[in-house]
Image 1 (tube, rainbow, N blue to C red):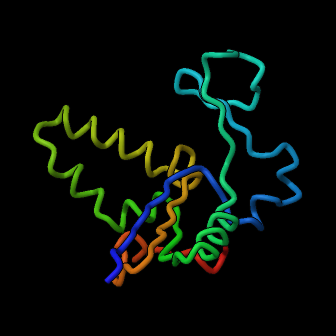
Image 2 (spheres, one colour):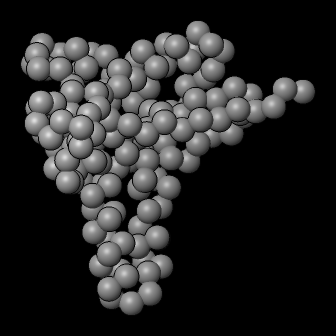
Length: 143
């Protein structure tokens, strides 16, 4: 019996219809320097991170062509809420630890931070289980 294979992808990205939307004429290139994001790759040369968003439709197509199944696609916010990130915050001991965890969760969940910009995709081969992270939202139809 072949072994099951499972992969979770978390990254900035969009389904193709949004990725190539006419309003996105400047592309998806993003630069990050000292916790700030901007669009100019010519400043802070050599000391900033430069990235481009993922076309998740293309990832799904390549996965299916390679014999994988797309088990789910959602925003990071929906995925983390479905996997009970709130319990990690609640388990904090003391007010300082609770405040730190809540602040970190806010960055991961809020639409203006990483919550909506980051997407999550599950790919698998021979994995027969449902993935709980997609219980609140599954955007596969948008791919």
